Length: 249
Image: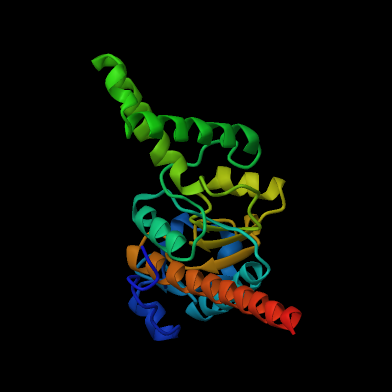
């Protein structure tokens, strides 16, 4: 999705967070006690998240991600649950960053060289499936190649431009993406996560307490964070332009 066609972000206010349902946590019986500082109270057995803490988390994440982008760093978007998948892809593409929206492949970071070699296979399959070579194979082999291509494209297309380790990772639901969080910690990749009341905030670097099951809340958070990355990228380009002008003088 191009930046021009992307939905405009709503102003970041307590009211906009409440309208998106970010304040709804999980059932109180399913909570992680470490989330206590982010819980405002209970309503009908459901924990209510303190949206003032959500705002603080978003502003911290905004400042950090803008700086990463301004320094030319990579931010990897990760969210494979049904409610997050489409928005993860849209917002990552909007700000020109890699993403994982279908399945986290074990070793995406810890075995990065192998993942890169699989991307070479994806490109090879792309040439076959989308070119004239496919007709030279038997019907059975054509079907097999097309299945392999679709599976690899689904799992790897979002990271095909990621030619180095990311500097930061935006994660929707660190419980669901525990393998991604584990690999990020091994490589000191800073994690920014939308984290609900059933998760452990100590597992991530920059927690954003909020509802990680609502499509609307996920859209609001990711749009806001993608905007921060776009701002940082513009700052980087402006510095480059100023540097070019200075050298020309």
